[in-house]
Length: 154
Image 1 (cartoon, helix red, strand yellow):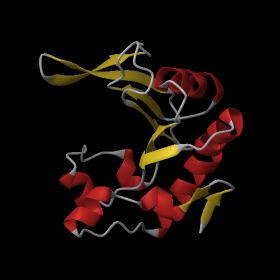
Image 2 (cartoon, rainbow, N blue to C red; image 1 turned 45 degrees about the horizontal axis):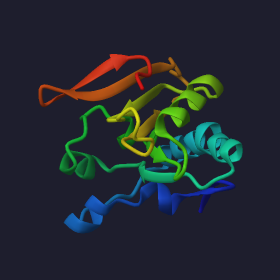
Image 3 (spheres, rainbow, N blue to C red; image 1 turned 30 degrees about the horizontal axis):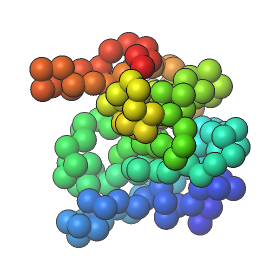
Image 4 (tube, helix red, strand yellow; image 1 turned 180 degrees about the horizontal axis):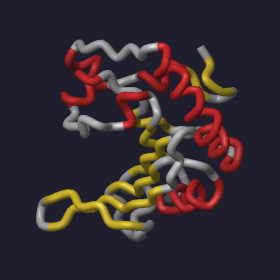
């Protein structure tokens, strides 16, 4: 099933953790609608602009899968509203900045990016038509703990 011209349901539900732990990762109908909105309003726009394949590291997560990977209990991944992405050959900081400047989104997080190492970390983006507050954060480790700072820090 296609969610947009370049994004399929299979890639948006693929989960190494689910496979490894033999957990289900099947979305409910409302999750499908959310994934379609995310694909159409953010991921497809990114793909069209950069003209390269967008690697979806993680998108939909069944709550059991989310728990197994240590995700937040309120994660937009569990609602089909979020994806962690990268584009080979494009710095994650540049990808995050382009999304910030050109897309509607609920939350954008440049996660664990190391300045000077373009392919470090990844970009988390969520889309919720009822709440696209355009929150922008950078996640990093400080003293062994994950902290979230406002804005893109690259």
